[in-house]
Length: 208
Ligand SMILES: Cc1ncc(COP(=O)(O)OP(=O)(O)O)c(N)n1
Ligand SMILES: Cc1nc(C(=O)O)sc1CCOP(=O)(O)O
Ligand SMILES: [Mg+2]
Image (cartoon, rainbow, N blue to C red; front, top):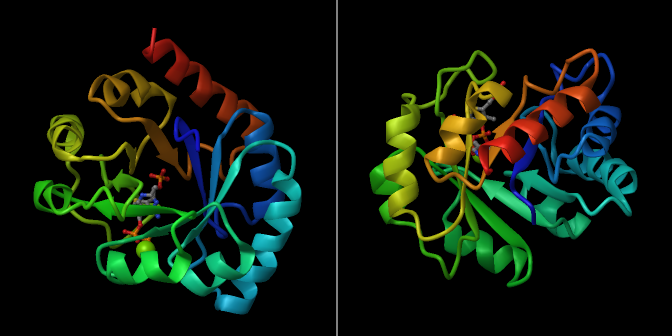
């Protein structure tokens, strides 16, 4: 899974174009992972949207990750499941999804990072780097220095999320992150493909 440019879909921000078309455009613009996050959807609706996303992503090489809803991830044979600290025990998630599906875990501080078991978790989402209106109940922002310390501790690759856009690629890649996860930098933009391209270019530039 190429974690460099990681799109987290938000149904509200994607209301204009829709989540499937937003994902299609973002992947055309170079996004490597699409996470379906829909707090209001039950399992059946997650599966229905996930199936449409699967069709849209087919043949692109982009990965489909399901947020929180283990049964939907399993039913869809998704590429990954992403859970937070309060969602469920990581070992329970791993036994539900089996050994092949990638498991992502949110980490919000150094203690969370120290507790990551690399035999169970494949990548972490360090969250949030900056405050963001996209998620109302986020943990205190860790900032770039906090991100660097968390990445140093984590035994698995780290993407980071929260208030990020192309303008932050230099700082977060410099801090050791494997990629940037974004919502509003792509969702709801007039041209999500161009927004994704701008993100990818900034990441490529940061890695030079
Ligand atoms: C890549 C990535 N990182 C962090 C999160 C946040 O997940 P979580 O803490 O479970 O919060 P919710 O988004 O589920 O409310 C994420 N979704 N993706
Ligand atoms: C989905 C999500 N999780 C977060 C966390 O801190 O756990 S912040 C967030 C939303 C990030 O949105 P934007 O890119 O628009 O700032
Ligand atoms: Mg969650």
